[in-house]
Amino acid sequence: MIIKKFKAAILEKNNSGLVIRDIFFKDELKKGQIFIKLKYSGICGKQIDEIKGIGGRDPYIPHLLGHEGSGVVLEVGPGVVKVKKSDKVILHWIKSNGIQSETPKYFSKSNVINAGSVTTFNEYATVSENRVTKIPNGYSLKKACLFGCVATTALGLVNYELNLKREDVLLVVGVGGLGQIIVQAAKNFKIKKIIAVDLNNHALKKAKKLGADEILNIKEEDNFEKLKNLEINKSVVTTGNISAIEKTIQLTSLPGICFVMGVPKKQGLIKINAWNIMHDQTIKGSLGGNTFPKKDIPKFIDLDKKGKINLNKVIFKTIKFNEINKGLKMFKSSKTTGRILIKF
Image 1: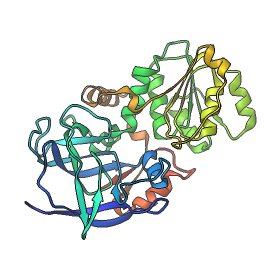
Image 2 (image 1 turned 60 degrees about the horizontal axis):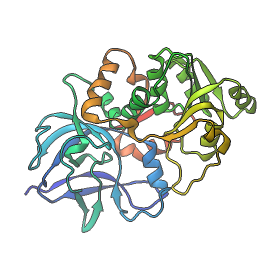
Image 3 (image 1 turned 90 degrees about the vertical axis):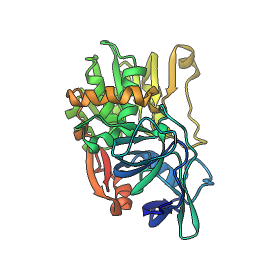
Image 4 (image 1 turned 45 degrees about the vertical axis):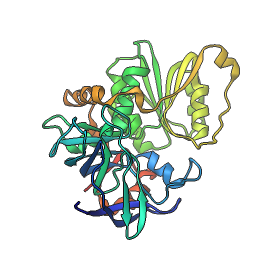
């Protein structure tokens, strides 16, 4: 057994910065486990939520974070057949084909550091076989990282769940990385209108360049009134903010459908109009865009290769691993207009 030592960003306490420490993986790889050298990781809103503890008490602290990345396979455990040493892979939280292995345990000095089936805020990771997908030859490791979460989720929603038609008016509330890919993908369907709404004027200007027909800053009360008159029959809200979710539902027509993509607090309650529900207004959640990585990631990568979407435009900034806490703060900044990536 070779003891593997590397650095990881650890959540040791809610509402605090992550702590970068040396950790150790002291075990042989178990059935279905893969040992990977990370190259890139995305910062997702889910990690911000975990740090804040919006899901309630976290029994696994201290633990590792991150679920969107790319890297190179260094070693495979018993039973692994879908990848081999030296393969370049995407690390994703959405389950795919392959073995669901037991989760790894790492150590920092004598303390156990917990981890899930996939983590990406660490230089190396022991990952379950069903959480990796091989990257096609020649495709960018940097862009491939986005298929760990944001790109797959957005493209799955647009291609499999929104069921877009020429006459549709689509409202996208929140045009960070997720919203920007939704706008680009929806543009391919040549629908009647795409409306982008946000509090961030920088993000709105970017959404306009990426294909939004109309942009509105929801801070301005007049703009909410304008939206009421636009007969929006399909809407997507990418934030977990309760007020934003409620307003998006209010703006969705009868009949119409609203997809909630952001993660609200676990006990978060929304007020809805029962009359509207009875008159064929649908509110639906979407986890991962109803995608299956083995089948869908290669298909979605082709969209980028063919210029149907442009993932380079979604990447706002790439930072070094030791700047991760700076990146987490940047994620929440009003000047940030897309995905922040960590380069190892």
